[in-house]
Image 1: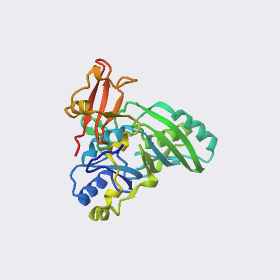
Image 2: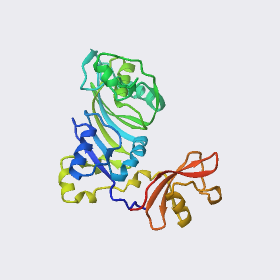
Image 3: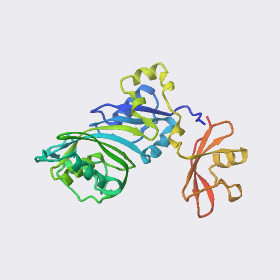
Length: 303
């Protein structure tokens, strides 16, 4: 099933040195569309998959941000920086010539599963209304509470001392810069993230991504419509439900589906995507286990 909306999601390969918001602004200028957002910030030092949501598809941003991602990072051992990446000031150096591949692989095992991770000071998180990176630039360091993050897979794919290439499959909120820093601390030599490439966000793969440079041209000649993805593509992991006329009216009015017209649910808080009988995507529903009803979380009126 596919959505019949006038806009959607572009899979863009963000280049080095450009911020995620610069890609958004460039898309706005090229398309003439005001409602544009991205599905998960990439630092300027990073490259790779940056989903750009256009028009009504901006309402899908949270599902992209909440979804799983894959990264490839080159970590330089023996050099610690204040930002945990290659753009920062070097704060410490150490000899890492004795570090072996086996030691790195053993250390990486401690990052697998649900783990606590301390965010870097140079991050967009807020403390008392101020971004941590603003505080860091003022020379202020504050204590950061560890946050639970999930790593589904982590692998050392290459090691040419002092550079270790690590690939990670993770959930929301995982900082690759913190991984680089923490790995260096475990190994006793320090380390920082030298490069970072995002290989996947949800269903979007790097091999299928568009370069930023042609965006102006593909919007000018209308070719972007050949590359845009329907908004509901990010919901493939959710069960799909076809709504007959009665349920369709309830959903489009933003009303819950009464217990007498149940859609089977297996877990509290489960979500499903809803389509009309002619294939139009109209809603995301969430199951409220307390009253046994499916309630609209987001409604998309047919165009």
